[in-house]
Amino acid sequence: MRKLLRLGAWLVAAAAALFLAVQLSFFARLWWWKDHDPDATAFMRARLEQMRERDPRASLKHAWIPYARVSTHLKRAIVVAEDARFVDHEGFDWEAIEKAREKNRRKGRVVAGGSTISQQLAKNLFLSGSRTPWRKGQEALITVMIEHVMDKRRILEIYLNVIEWGDGVFGAEAAARQHFGVSAAALSPEQAAWLAVVLPSPRRYERGRLTPYLAGRVNTILGRMGSVQIP
Image (cartoon, rainbow, N blue to C red):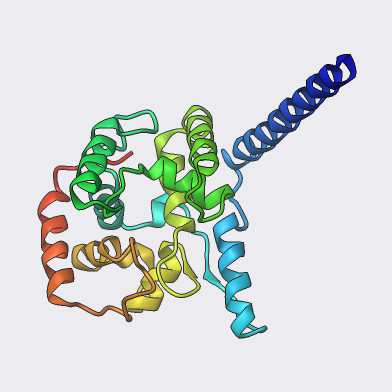
């Protein structure tokens, strides 16, 4: 019995040490990315692997650009569409989470999410696309780290450079050139709003395609862009 207890205690200690090591690894990389640009994210690597299952020569479209070279229209559109209280919260928008939970309860299935830009960045940088309780817990821990290590400007800068905007298209610069043939700095308000609208399902829409649904959402975002705060 004593041997079993000692073995159990050892296993618990080993698991705790492994957990701590993983968290320290995440924290160290976030600290580095505070002023160094990530080469790729876990999500980007996973997408490239999927693409190369179909075509071994496949590659991602991605080009990093500084925050100052991203259209202010796009910054505003993204915050409106994804996280209207981005500059005010500390990683979690509890009001949005509660609204999403209530909407999902009424529908009987998951139709809405309340993830902030910081939470989405945590998932994209490090995690898989699974929806397990462990992954959501890890996402929350990384989100707290992100908010403590980086300021809002840096968080939004990395987010704009790593999110997916088409099949193998990542970041604002590649997205602007893929969909509209312009640089991210030259995006118009309408183009920026379109890019914000397609984010939930970026591979569903063809280059610059505008459906009645997208047109309505674009107009909604355009109407709110002037009042939103950005870092």
